[in-house]
Length: 286
Image (cartoon, rainbow, N blue to C red; front, side, top):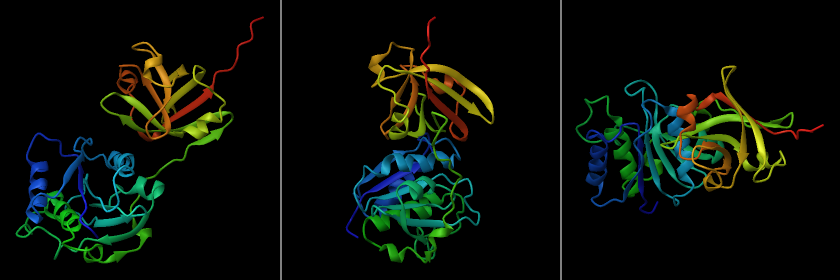
């Protein structure tokens, strides 16, 4: 591969030296390697969000970009350390713990290889078993991005069927309603991003300015029920008013203008957070 770019993601935060250490390791492979941070604010141990943030971002980077994603509650266990090549010819270096779920389903993975730590591990780090982000992933990612190693030199090939995946739910149209899940919270604004895509939503035959009945539930308990207006952007409603909109990933979003919908109603993300959207019925006045 030609020399690429290195993009880092983790749940480390930026209050200590962990992220800087990974930057340092990458620069020890080659000084001046272009390094970018996707985010280091993934909630601790939240593999689902790490998986989704890769999907949110990866389409906007060129071929041969190397992503390093470390949300690794199983560090030091028997979970595998891997590098995958996507259908768009990008690379992801990560623990194989579910982080590849969304990319595998919505973008596609061509090949997966297990990292051979006998050759792809930071020298003199073999006695450390709690910071693979620095010692294995940043080091391997930088070596791959700089062309120091080829993808084939990462380690042995694994079957694609071995990729560890989190459970997903598809959005569907049912009984004149669009039904899906809350995929992610749009931080820091607190908007809800659903997995109901624009084409499904438009089959409800709504237009800007129409109202829709929205129900959000978790484990069978309704957390929110209300009527929201479908708007082109936040500018169409007053501060504090709710709306439905199409987000930057072409899916339905639910929000307040300049207020957190998630915090107001205590809503989180994942397959146990269901959302149902139905066009408000015309009321006949007698």
